[in-house]
Length: 123
Ligand code: FES
Image (cartoon, helix red, strand yellow):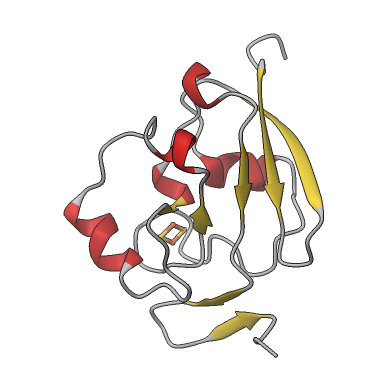
């Protein structure tokens, strides 16, 4: 549709780049679901801040453009595997013009708060 005028690229757990269109204000989890992007185990709690499977790693220049992080997101992010200085939870990040065209990395391994592990294990 005409308001689908932003783009975002996800590099999935297999190293493939998945390009998607997005609307202003749409969360990255909503983008993944709407386009049925192939990201194993992503968004297990459907954006209710009860998992960390939507962990994404941002480029520093985009990370600085993201909205503020809540205590709830911080607590959940602490449980994510492979946490980095530019990690956030995708269900809490909304698309905006400032981050239009960005590329985000899906970490290789995830473990959600329920102790299940999905995705590839490190070799
Ligand atoms: Fe579970 Fe984001 S989808 S915290």
